[in-house]
Image 1 (spheres, rainbow, N blue to C red):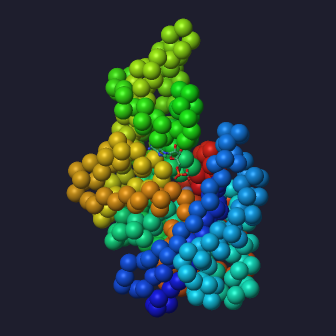
Image 2 (spheres, rainbow, N blue to C red; image 1 turned 90 degrees about the horizontal axis):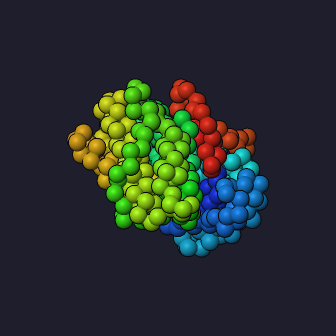
Image 3 (cartoon, rainbow, N blue to C red; image 1 turned 180 degrees about the horizontal axis):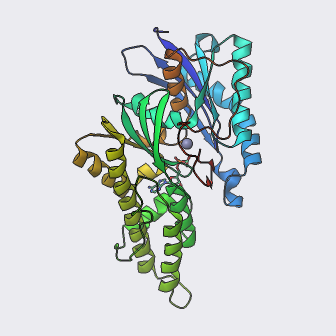
Length: 359
Ligand code: KG4
Ligand code: ZN
């Protein structure tokens, strides 16, 4: 299909309900006509993590109004839609099922094509939605639920080069914030606190001696707990010590991600660009460290705007358009998959993050 396309994207794999409308004319930049995201942070706040049943119920309630709002903001009706792209995994199964059933219902009622999209492919293809990034490129996904290096060879062609064997980096930021009595989400608060400190505390850089670009962050988190306990004065943590711990933790994170990015580039073979996405890519020190690695390697650097780095439906609509143009269509038998590795040939990773399976 080579003509203009207007696609509705649906996202519900974790704790954000998303609906977006994208228009794409071949040869031109894709246009995001609307991108509605309804988060559930407040619903899960009392539980210290995302509660799958609460998330699924909230998606069921929000999918309809979010879609109506996306259509309204885009100024189109369902008559103007050429197809529906929906996240079919990986993620929390109740939420993924809610989205897939909603999309199937709409597709059946309106006689529209249905395209199942891998949520991670949505993240990984975002640099092509927001910029002119050519295949093959290297993608580092770093969020509260994801952490992996992917070589992106095409819309349906991914090679996983490595990833975390335990926590995701955002999860580590959030746990460190909790340990230091900083508010959630932890990442931005640790970053602010780190500005007043110096990186003087020696913290481990796990898995540096291991070949390849797998990463581990749980030992780093434990070392932060030890540093905190050692710095207590009469049971309280002095402000300066807290700032130094934050600065040291952030420096360790930046160094681990930068060194592993260097390895990933070496392992990937020729790539046009090193792209980074996910909430942790908002961290200025981490982003700068990764940008330096790309510059050293003589390749491009790309970091999509934050609203498109974190979970959203515009990235799902875009991945849907890329797959649709390759001729991909799904039927009413499209399955919701809690686990769905992008690279079927890669060894499955251990662990499952705060926000669900790491695939
Ligand atoms: O991509 P995202 O919004 O959601 C998913 O995990 O799917 O990422 C959220 C994560 C949280 O763990 C948050 O603490 C982290 O990204 N984060 C940051 C920063 N901003 C958000 N981590 C470090 N520095 C930041 N400035
Ligand atoms: Zn995500």
